[in-house]
Image (tube, rainbow, N blue to C red; front, side):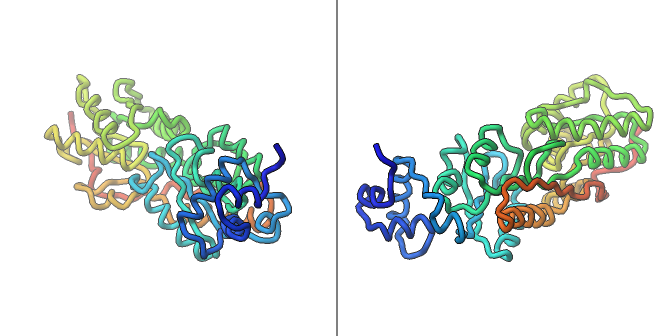
Length: 340
């Protein structure tokens, strides 16, 4: 079978070659039904535009695809503010932002189809990439950037926070308040984040010559409910800590809710700290002490790095922007250590 052409795609779709060209170049004037039909046939026929096509050389689509999944979605309070800021920065640079849901394999999502068709200038990811996704992007020479990368070293453009520094900052603050018995709640299911925050926690304890209590180390948090269960596990211990260091604000809010449901006072019985400074942390009762991460700067720097790649026509550019990660925001979830 010969190579699939635009004419062949047009015949299968029952449209003109001009219509197919409009779809390829993401131009207006085509109904969503027709556009979806043409894109489906392109996918079915494994059609990839010729390397000399206008939209892969001198022309750009001005489309940036923003990847979301069950973890990095609008439902996640940390990412929702980043998603808003990405849209604003991208629009200021003349880009359209198109959301692409990835709830299965990456190659089945709309961003992957757009990359194959040459109508995606770049892709924005909200966490580090699997090896198969990285290979796909390299194969198609696609510019991309990762926001909130947790890897110490990575072969791609990314913006990251120094979560080790953040954990160290909040742990040292609790120690300065007289807390010597500290618990930790983190996410072993996200190893790089877990390692960074746990190292910062341990470093602060070691510097102050304080003990680490294994029974108070909880690593099964990944959302509000699981963090709440981690706190329940701590409450079931024979002896109790006075301070709880949480790897994210969301974990801290879940843990605080469980402590309060069990009749404990915050900060009278326990002091809680988090990292992120999500919007709801200031609204929770009591408001959460945390490390502020500038979500708007996260997004702005990421989009600028991606724009730099696209403008240079060099998807191999590799730069990392590290966000300031030690700005402590003291609120009412912390106080002096109680006497046990």
